[in-house]
Amino acid sequence: MTNAQLGGFVAELADLMALDGADRRRVSHYRRAATVIRRFDHSLAALIEGGTDLSRVPGVGKGLAAFLGDLVRGGTSPRLERYRERVPAGLPGVLRLDGVGVTKARALWAAGIDSVEKLGEALANGELRGMHGFGPAVVGRVRRGLAEMAALSEKALLSQADRVAGAVAEHLRGGAVVVEVAGDLRRRVEIVGVVDLVCAAEAEDLWAEAVAIERASLSSGRGTNPVELSLDGVRSRLWAVPHGVTGAVAHHLTGPPAYLEALGDRARGKGLELTPAGLRGTDGESTAEDAIYAALGLPWIPPEVREDAATLARADRGLPRLVERGDIKGDLHMHTTWSDGAATVRRMVQAAAARGYRYVAITDHSPSTGVVGGLDAARLRAQAAEIAQVQEDHPDIRILRGCEVDILPDGSLDLDDDILSELDVVLASVHSVFDMTETRMTDRIIRAMENPFVDILGHPTGRKLGRRGPYPVDVREILRAARRLDVAVEVNGSPRRLDLDQRGLSLCEELGVRVVVSYDAHSVTRLDNVNYGVDQARRGWLQSDQIVNTGTLDEVSRWIGRRRG
Image: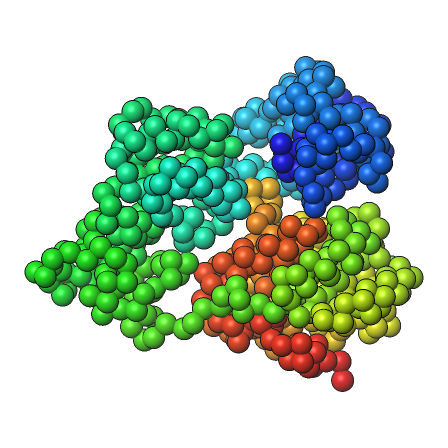
């Protein structure tokens, strides 16, 4: 059982306890523990099986250690099952909606609304009107939350799809099956409808391989093509194709349709025919992607930017070299145990150095965010002493002092300028009061960027995929201000955020706004979020020279000082 699964069970227990009326402090402790467990560096299951006493781990304690032991050894826990019997199965889903806390969820339960489905019906029927605590603003947030949840229904975040595709492909390759990724996953879209894997195999052999995938449930019979299965709630299709055409079929399934239609028109103009199995012409058939594009007089086009005819027009003018993972030289947004991170400053720095980074910025939260341990002036200065010690021990990587500072409702910042002036990097973000008009939210963010100590605007639209949509804001106006004020905007690599989105990043490319590809890492493993940030930047056509943290330490140091003269 993975740490992510264990953390999920602890989070479920915390939700059930809260809905059952447990002490708030106890619930809060379990929720913090769930986060720590998800982000823990080592396998807790392996530690438990090895006899380690987890009650000695800070934040765990005897009760939680026993609960984790039950999960690892038996797959569930009597304690968890007791709460599941007391609380309706659909109620925790209601609790996760934006705008619904424990008090409102319990009020809905008392009114017989104990699932997301029933809440949707009540909203449509006007049953929420007049309920205590459900004024127009709350109802609006619930409606938007339901829409966001529906957008992810029977779909998966990109990171979830990656995990499932990796597990399925690893199993198939172990059986000597050639596998190529296709579809939404290959284009690196934020929400994946279905994982498409093209396999060089006979349909019946592929079905037999799929049957043997642990925990997978198949929804197609022997000999069908594609083989359809579900693993960890993510749907996959395994396409059986002859050897030699996997590349062509993967290209066709990657699409999207408007792009394939434009390619097909171009092929017909050259007397050729684009088929799912390749490019057909008088000289035979081209089945490799690069051969298809060469025959059409085009450079190979990265899947991330394949959209429609406009993509081909841009390719005709000459494709830019899009940013790549190897271009990133440092990280300018990470959290540690000083606020809501799972690892110490030292551990995060060591992990970043091991990944070859030349610099990192420690950017724990300021107090108003509401996370445990938000840093005020005194704690920032105390943290500085620790950073200095770690820097002395790791001269091979530069540690920048920073902070993710809250943008308050009036556009002011959560820390005074005399404190901000001591920092190397200031990241300003909105974390609260999302229910504003577009004009007020836009003015709020621009006022924050006008502060000369602000270097980066963090997750600019505040969205959380599947949970909360973007707050109302004029993105173009924000980016124009960022260009005028020389403030960089973030593309946040957290798979739940991926903010800015593709359209916003394309605007950055158009307007000449500098971008920071950040990981928003709250643990060592989350440093790998860089891959999702780079994917998103590529979808926005961004090149290396437009991204701040592709620069050398000297270049970044000069950039940091650009507004502080």
